[in-house]
Image (cartoon, rainbow, N blue to C red; front, side, top):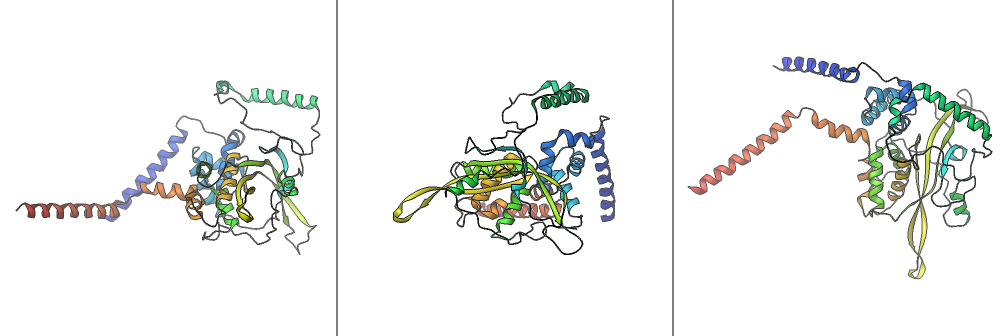
Length: 375
């Protein structure tokens, strides 16, 4: 009986996989990977961030295979990541070296280097553009040509987008924000060691940047609704490319002997969170704490939410669930959460039958007791 059940189950699984592919190609068209890379920038950035693997091409393949399901695409990316050899460690990347393409501050109107809006949906009307139904590659090429001609006529932008100063440095210069202490301790790696509590800040930041975007945003929303923080403000949000370098793989490491291996686009946010500090003689003053967020690609809402949660989880005495490290960090991981909820679809015949037998036995005993009382 067991062999027949296994054999039948195997055949059913194979047919299910066949049906899965049929659903993806049944209309006779397939999405090209290049089209996904070019047209689904936001989804690709989300998948790369949650999977801790920076590769637009791999993310596009995973999205295609998962039929646009981000949780499944992240699962595929993490599984592939686990098979990759770790050949080198990059040098510490400094966000001051970012070549900025978008940089704003909600705290100050005038900032050195100016507000750089870049590409954003903040100012568009949230109306469906039905013209996109008939858009062709020729239309895109014509628009690009006209845009490039316009840029050429206006002349080059004289703003130096490299090494723009940090907005918060000016608050530190005024003594309104405490100086950050240098911490050269090697960060923990949550992809190689189990997460223990209390978690170090490096572990918390890793879990937050890998967290499911919607979950991180929801927890941050709960925080500012009244579970731990007053209204935070974006001190600075910047998006741009960071250079990645590795030491010379042959010979001793020399500060001047490094290899540039490429760039990664990131979103970095420094949040200003007002806190009430009790001074001497019971006097209370408002000061600012910092919350930090950084993630792959242009992923602004998640980076802001990450900054809010970074500060919220920094408390030593959690008063709210949003300040509880274990509660937050264990529940924002998309693969863990999706996997556990989805596993409920799998066979639970033995455990459910055990519960069912227990319920039947309880009811039978209760009925027998009632019959005894009626006698």
